[in-house]
Length: 182
Image (cartoon, rainbow, N blue to C red; front, top):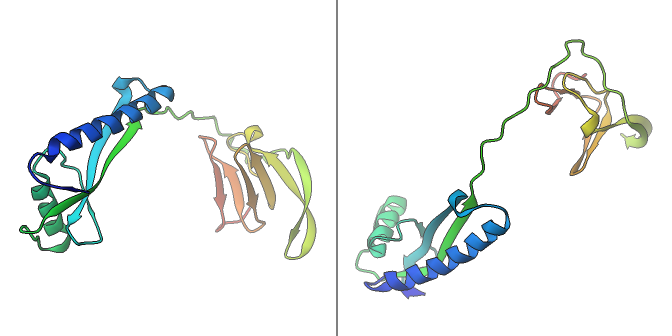
């Protein structure tokens, strides 16, 4: 821990520069050039003897004064005569990406049902039944699913019960409506 006293800024700047150096390297490895990186510094600080901290984002100003302002805003009072301790220095880094362009698909107005990829025997309410299994990648916008069913994809398996309706919207999102049914 460091006391938020005059002269601590130099030590903090060295700590922040090292954290940012590591973050830059990690983001570069992820494919983000320096121009597409953002780094945000913050400190966790508290009054000496306290067991909880507040986050301070103003790291280039009088840290004790910034902490006192944050404490006053949060708790309604500040103890400006107390020593302020810096518990940790943090850098939050992110890579900036261009806004994704959502692809729209033509939606059929026919309310057709999708063709299942397979069927599976499953248990609902302690009864064994046969239900459709759909591959998520094969489903097209505007199609309805026969429920109950299972939708499989690379990262998830979705079980849609008989009391729900399931369709795909113009963006290809799977919409499950438990209010209307199928």
